[in-house]
Amino acid sequence: MFAVQFDRFGGPDVLHLTTTDAPRPAAGQIRIRVQAAGVSPVDVGLRAGRTPMSAKLPLPHIPGVDAAGIVDEIGDDVDGVTIGDHVFGIVDLTQLGGATAQFAVLQLWARKPPTMPWAQAGAAGSSIETATRALDLLDPQPGTTLLVDGAAGGVGSIAIQLAAARGIRVIGTARADNHDFLRQLGATPVTYGPGLTDRLNALDLPRVDRALDVAGAGTLTELLHLTGSPTAVVSLADFTAPTHGVRLSMGQLAGEPDGRHGLNAAATLFTEGRFTVPIEAAFPIQKATDAHETAERGSRRGKIVMTVDDAQGI
Ligand SMILES: NC(=O)c1ccc[n+]([C@@H]2O[C@H](COP(=O)([O-])OP(=O)(O)OC[C@H]3O[C@@H](n4cnc5c(N)ncnc54)[C@H](OP(=O)(O)O)[C@@H]3O)[C@@H](O)[C@H]2O)c1
Figure (cartoon, rainbow, N blue to C red):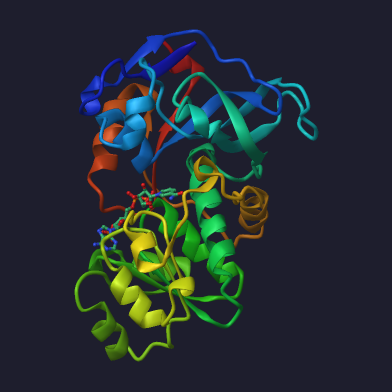
């Protein structure tokens, strides 16, 4: 099969298109012919060799944890899916990648709604799982207010919508250029950075009952002050969280219950017109370097994705 891979850690230019053996699904897994694969911060960090997980990564490595495609092989002990089904989901996270290729093996998946574009489906899996897991941990009640710090990116833009669908009022932080984007997704926007509490007070918004730290930008003290309790805050990206008494949620890799049920729920919401996967940019797989360069820029609206077409192969 063809695949994007890297043989050494470095900048986006270490990515190259090559041919390699197609993976086979183990028990509980399925293989898909990939139509689209997301690019996430973890993929960029692993490729750059700057996360602790990079040290465990066998090279060469095919990046990408999210993919959507057409089921072409089914492992043992799998029910409810048929060859030819259109699905989206997440690779086996212990492998830390494998999605940006002609074929990929999925560990978690849901049926893709027929009207959901491949690009949205390919980018969605881990952000939906993460947002669902964080909301389950925070357990905000309908009518209460959730602050999402770092709301415009891949996880935040999805967390806003899933929270709103649960009947929760959402305030999201973003740079000013992204405020209309947040409004469209159902959140009240406020600019991130120092002075957040003062800006919230000036806007005369409801009291913040729960806070989700997506950005890991060092705001935990302020989020604790706003909510009044460490149990009312969850971080996805601030490794100092435990020193504040705040839960740092790392999901399956840390042995936590995952948010897999969120995949089917988000698919249903999409079909009802209540959910979308915002795509900032889509690149053909041959432009993997450009996709990672864009992902490295930090500020964004939603997800970066690569599209895969057999006709594009090498
Ligand atoms: N623990 C887990 O299970 C888990 C799972 C997935 C991701 N993550 C982590 O969660 C983080 C976010 O992931 P992502 O996929 O959403 O990233 P992303 O798509 O790259 O989005 C990052 C967002 O952060 C915002 N941002 C930048 N500086 C900020 C600041 N000082 N305060 C608040 N927001 C700021 C940007 O907003 P603007 O565009 O408005 O500037 C941008 O939209 C990453 O660190 C990722 O590794 C953790």
